[in-house]
Length: 186
Length: 186
Image 1 (tube, rainbow over the protein chains, first blue to last red):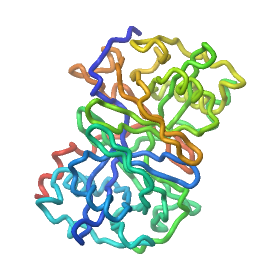
Image 2: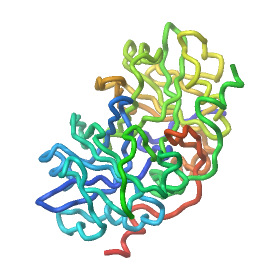
Image 3: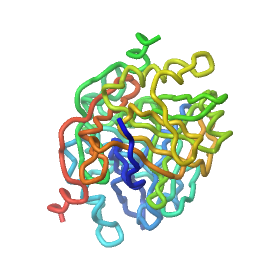
């Protein structure tokens, strides 16, 4: 069990794949992102780190809003496409059916099982990325993705990204109940 | 495909489960966390949101350092235990074999396949959480978890958390190659 130093750029943990939406030049635009996390319990807030040059950032900064859309495995190709092609050169607005919520400026994706609408509350400038922090204003889903009114990860069927090998993976089997399975070590 | 509004507190995406390490009162302490994300490409940086009352935060703020340890599925109970029991009342330092790296103040876990040592560069105060942003100083793993020198998610075998059902899940099967499988939509 001897540890060795490895490349600091090699992260080996599962990263949730989402599509970040914003309105740019009066058109909805979506960018695939995996550097995303919830960052506050109440009110719920979510942060997403985007490379500074991204087209989507223009809309986030202008309208002070963005959406986080969680695609299911069936959307893996469309999601990847949104990470390959920039809105600067290609109009991605026709790729999905788009809807708007309370903020009116955060385009969301009907095909995504879960869509989260965020009001920008902070933008932390890093060297190469901007960490956009949004307070969740509304969340949208469909009956078929819910269990007892809440999102059900097995019904949503999201996928994660591993780096640096750059693979997408589905979610596997249940391996424990949180805030519970560790009790036996008490 | 009609969307309905759901509870804004109900997040349905996969959250990577990690153990955040810090030295508190001269003892290593570890806290289970799942609100974690990479936030800068170069130099690599990682952010973790921790509720303001956590014992671990004291050490992060004092030493300006922390570690992010990625446990494998075999450590699910120990990890969960570190999310149930606070270092305020229970000494968790004996739960794992601990080692230190370049910073000397960020305790890391030998049993974890991947350990990332971070220098605190920013702390963004949210209403209930603090978002600790750390620049990665060093990363540690073992030959058996690597492929061509980089962490291999299948060998590491990490797990994710889903909320609000609070379940842990393993990683499933490969569903696509990132920055590649979407090319056919061009």
